[in-house]
Image (cartoon, rainbow, N blue to C red; front, side):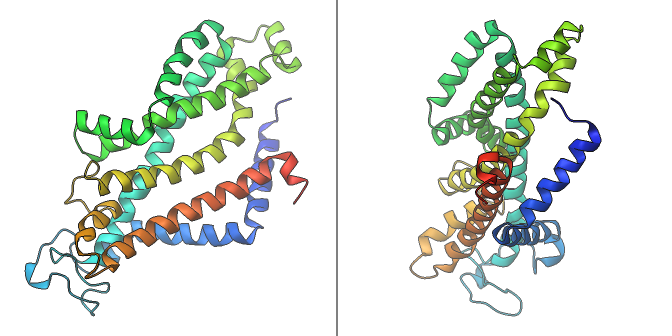
Length: 288
């Protein structure tokens, strides 16, 4: 049966406490907090303008003025990494929001209404049959390379996965006694979905959201590295790796620094997702 608001609040606090009781989750949370702070405080942490070109300083090493040196255009590497965190986190968070909103909508519709399931899910199956990176490249090529179009292009392939997960949950609880009782008592479709069905999707959506977040950051970096993502002049970790590949043998840190940031962010989010999955799955919780 569904939980009251105080019970749901107590459950959230217990889950958060259980998750943070794991030392891998604590390390991951600290890393993510530091990356978020770097993104928020990039304007103050950056030593110089991240898009300022200075050919006279190209490929310089670390110094007091340029902590991590400069790239092939004389731009400050540290400043571009700090500002690049904004792009990666914005893409990750935006992708999760778009994918979850549309995925939940289509999942509820297809899970509750049989006629919608036969139509909408066939379209979703078609989207899932296309490799996500190829679909994203095609959408960016059609719409143009901006932050908004890249975000949408990355989110579209994730929508069918969220929709299928929500659909399975809705179909599983649709015939539960408490749902049937609410229907007999005259509860409308949407109030019943909101009060009695959607709460069952919160736990799997939290876990799914962490993996979508990490996947979005990776996909944005791949698109930018291939030249099909964020405009090249915009400081992003993928663009930095794309610019540095030509000078990899001469100055490998141009790829190492942004690549390390991508790896740390994705690894931290995945670690939190794994711990969250284990705590929310009763079968896994019994083993811990």
